[in-house]
Length: 469
Picture 1: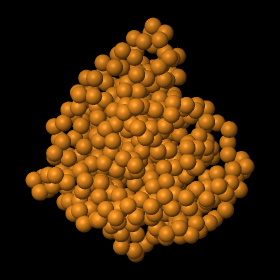
Picture 2 (picture 1 turned 120 degrees about the horizontal axis):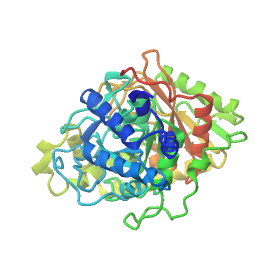
Picture 3 (picture 1 turned 180 degrees about the horizontal axis):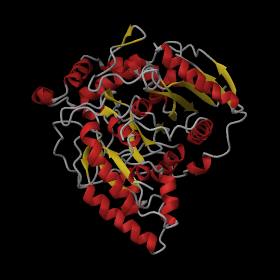
């Protein structure tokens, strides 16, 4: 097996080959690190590469396999961490000039769990400043480029993670998602991404948008994501909003098929502007669920666009972060983030309180819809990857868009906390990936994984790779 093939092996396959002693964790880690060294200068997926640490951990894993100690579920499997998440002794810039030299003295809870499971730490992946937008450009290292087309965005805010996984720079990547930040880059880069139910994977320190942010996996295969989730899910006292410790077997949940499920499909949720080519590709993908034995119904939920709700939460949260020092640091901040902060400063407390009440009402509307359906399908995004470094695409289907408002299919489910995944479902004529979003009932992550795995089996995507080699 050549080095490129090693870099594209799924985590589940790596584990099998390691246990059989047919493959070495050190060999795989070296191959991935060499690929990062070759491709990262162009892609800018990684902000920091921890090569020495990775090789040390891989050697430890190799010794464990040789001694028959094979029980740790990610032993010797390479993983990357988004540069918003704290990592002990490893620079964590948060995409900001203000934190560009921060080296935490602690690990986030999910990082501790990955380490305990034997994962090999490759480094930190690129993100915009404090994760504020759907592109990963920042003033520390610049934007991440899409592996499918240089000059296009890899998305955000977990754009470095999306590009890394798509380019074979590690099979497992951690993302976080406060309005679509796992699903946006996953869709733009043609990989699988899962925003788990809110609180399933504990978060510490808390995000500025604590009540919206979810931590989850970005991978090339569904079962790799399930393995990542299995390791990282469960209660942690540092996150008072994290869920209780009864974690189901997410890997086993991928089996069984979806025959008999009731599935709703909506091409625009009744309010979203969508590029016609994207809508048609996603519609054909949604029809696959009928072939798999589901009862599929096209619907218009009749919802009002909940963007004004999430806009108030996001802008006030960012304003809150810099309440006491904004005038002193504004010149060091991303100009787009400055505009968000300034908007948040104008919001009255009563308006934010009213938005939170509307949030609860919207969540109840979604709950009522999901009482009739097991799954809701939509396009993941209304457009394909725009220019790298831009804050947003400018317009979609002739309609002007701005800030987070262009992510019309993803942010609703941050408001509700439901699990939502994106699966690669095709390419445009220009060769850019399109994603199909699979939304489940609150805390029913197992059904979302099972549906994604069934779709993956019917329409496999992992063998299609960006034109990098």
